[in-house]
Image 1: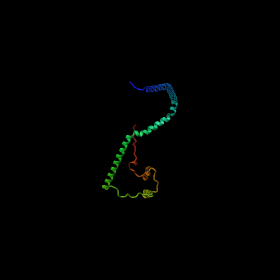
Image 2: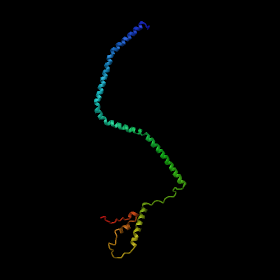
Image 3: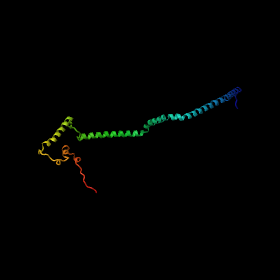
Image 4: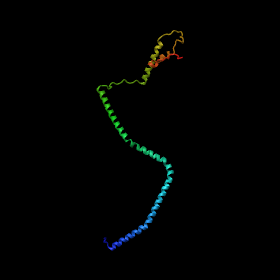
Length: 187
């Protein structure tokens, strides 16, 4: 039992009538705008599909380059666990290395193994050449004064092919020994 005044009911009826008229008038306009927008969107999508293949083909190197750069940029973030592992390993290695150095220095100092004597100074290049020349002169000097030969000629069979080698080369151990092969035939 609604007890509204007749004027209020009349005003309510007028507002409803006006709204109904607006809805009936605007509905076709709204539908027209909706369908125009829908067909326009379909046309744009169709045009985009038509142009996608050639544009996609032309932009393919750029797309691959951007994907590669993105993959290269994101790679270090995937290896974060490895970086942590290697960092801890480096710190442990550094600590152990420093401990070994300190232990070595302590032991050499305690056992007096550190070298306090200085080495003799090294020879200069001139002194080295002079010593080498002197040794060479000493090596050839006994040959000139060793034995006197008779004025006669010696036969060529007397000399061996290795006579000249023995005076110029000094023995260096096993490397100077000749390995003779046996002349056996398997036939």
